[in-house]
Length: 417
Image 1 (cartoon, rainbow, N blue to C red):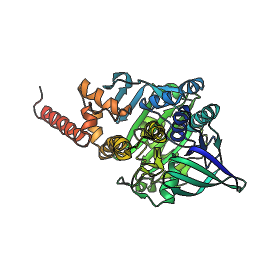
Image 2 (tube, rainbow, N blue to C red):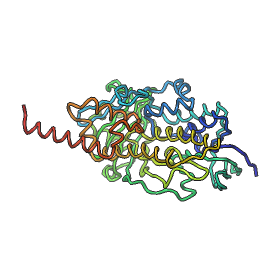
Image 3 (tube, rainbow, N blue to C red):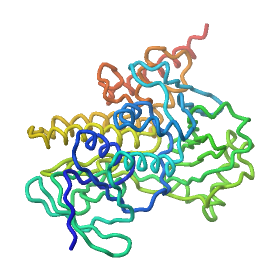
Image 4 (cartoon, helix red, strand yellow):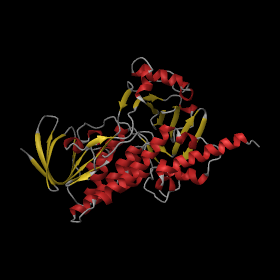
């Protein structure tokens, strides 16, 4: 049986895997990526956040992505019952990138993977990890390719960026349920011939359909727009028919969408994704580290997926380099706790979104510019900036602000000028 030796084996060729692979490769270590699927492949998570640009820059990917001329994104627009709240990243509290992209993920991920291959990192597609044996931090991984050929890879360390595949958590029974309730998404890509009716495409638009149900509108530079509804599974059960019939009924029922997407052509049969939230006991072990969605995937509402994927890989890749250079890494304090800072901040915002707390904040009159800039930083992905009180105090700050707004507004109604 053929055996290959590398310094670092990376599982998964998505943004998480390629960012980590590039960073480790740049340090002079031998890296190999194995990927279960054939690229390009479809995946959601099409609206990036500015914070991930720092990771893409360190990995050396930004120029290659710029060449693809993807749609530039400068903010996020929230809509409810005719009211609009715009967040522009240029106004954020935290110093950092003020723009990013909206991307068809198949094309974007393939661009990153092609670029890392040009850097000298081989990528084996349609290759499945079937077993891993650890001997301290060294490992032997058994893989099987599309033709059924079995081989082994000896590595000094493994970075698992396998996303929904969750390779190491599944192999070693590390999975545990998320504390977020199950939700369902129904989505497609549309031929957006009526885009001129909107003030897009330079930002994502999120529409509140009803409490706990929302819509994403993500325009691409090609003229195609990603469109999806997200809510409790019970919400969708009220609508008869197949996926396309359900989605067309929902579009017609939403005033913000009805005219623009009336009889629009769907690029593909609408798809569903359900119960996506998951987590694991810990993000590391002797000989491996987990990155990206394989650590924890929360919810698509604030586009946190690619940001957590790339930032975790940026962080993990640099720690792996130090590990291979002989430093004893405190993975809990240097990796898991910082990552949980970001995950937990996003989690607070996700929960506040579905509770309606953020509706009160986003659609309030006379918003405080400083507070809005601080919340904007979170929406830009800067969830590690603890100088921002809406990051540092994420568990309580949003509810306190919403209560203050509700008190102010009720007082105004009771005491009109």
